[in-house]
Image 1: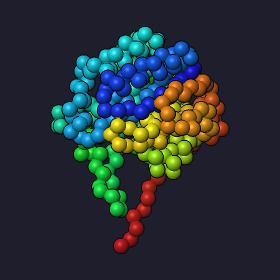
Image 2: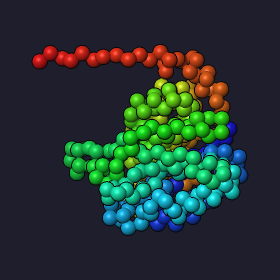
Image 3: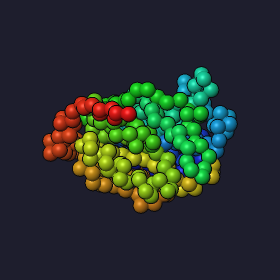
Image 4: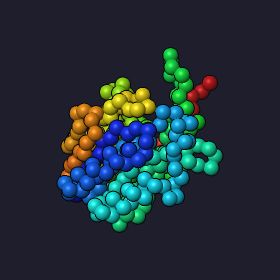
Amino acid sequence: MKIAAIQMRSGLDPEANLAALEPMLAEAAAAGARYALTPEVTMIFPENRDQLRSVAAPFEGHPQLRRIGELARQHNMFVHIGSLAVPLEDGRFANRSVLFSPTGEIAATYDKIHLFDADIAGLNAYRESATYRAGEEAVTAEVGDLRLGFSICYDMRFPRLYNALANAGAELMAVPAAFTVPTGQAHWHVLLRARAIETGSYVVAAAQGGQHANGRATYGHSLIVDPWGRIVAEFAHDEPGVLMAEIDPKQVTEARQRIPALRNARDFVVPRLQD
């Protein structure tokens, strides 16, 4: 099965981002991809919360998603929009991943579980939870002969999620992302390879890359990792493009037989320290 990771440089205009995506989906389909993943914040990469509120469309009848469904059907391909912001009733947003089947129907959705809330020395506090509401359910879905596990960007730092997805049958882990350059240089490759190794799964990571209209710079370097932790395809840059690889479910079975970590895992307790 051929899969594609689509690297983008999304801006502030959803229609312009869709226009940039369309020919890359066509390229992936022409090369034989049965599944294509786009990055986090595919449809709009906002400058601030107010700017996001001014353009984020409701999920029902979403104009760009409607067009993506048409493209999935046209190309007879699973199209996985890594994420987009969906307005919620409490004034916040869901960071939502949407998978379309080759019939153009929505096959599954996933709301990002782990939100980045941090106080960093020398910098302002960062509160992703002030803008987004965390999801509560891990999600898997069938993609051809494979079961796909969903995640988004910061989720990759939480191995328990991927362990749960693998135990639910996931053989391919999707990681759409918009990593900063410093964290990408330090952690991108090692985290993604670790998630593949510890679960014996393929990992496909589609990234935002380059200098964006919102002033942010993202790392790029989309990649596809096999269940043994080998990088089988990678962009060594931050330019938009279509990254392709052929994957084989038998390699998942083989890796999990050679290192049966999922089967060997045990529950345990951590004693409390005495005061």
